[in-house]
Length: 210
Image 1 (cartoon, one colour):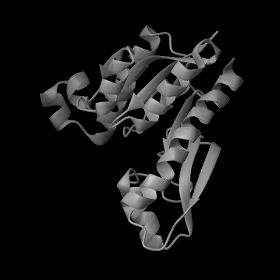
Image 2 (cartoon, one colour):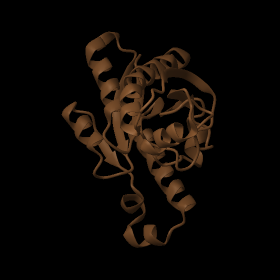
Image 3 (cartoon, one colour):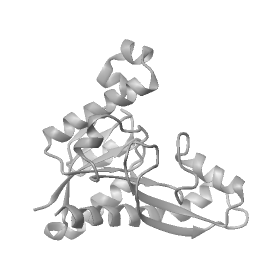
């Protein structure tokens, strides 16, 4: 039995592509199957990657699940809960076993954390617990690492527990920070490690759940 997996995305989807590529390369030997890709941004290029791979897609932005007027007046916590509940409904519809956050920016909250306890993993572009929390995503993370003078950075795969970038750490991969690095050059060094880590994280989840 393959682990039926939902992948949550917000942007370009390079880590989603790593999961798709591994699934395609391994074929019947792959222990997971991506059954739906969900984005909290309607214009995320990751949705095009999913469509190209013939994977069902859905958008759960606050506007799409709450309506424009309600979303405009809603608090951050209300938006998070509405998006989280919409994701949970889709996971139930597609009989999802596990969830991978691959560049997903909305902090999940509410019933989905109970329904998928220890079955949701997230990829973060730094070595947690450093450089995590609200506002620490994408190039913001790499800028903070460079400003701090750290000698190394990398990425982390961890369980999701409702705390932003919290949860038990499963995998970390490290790269050196080089003299003269920019956020772009540091990201370019970390990105291949992210692609390895997210696949390894899902395979680890497969072994734990199957």
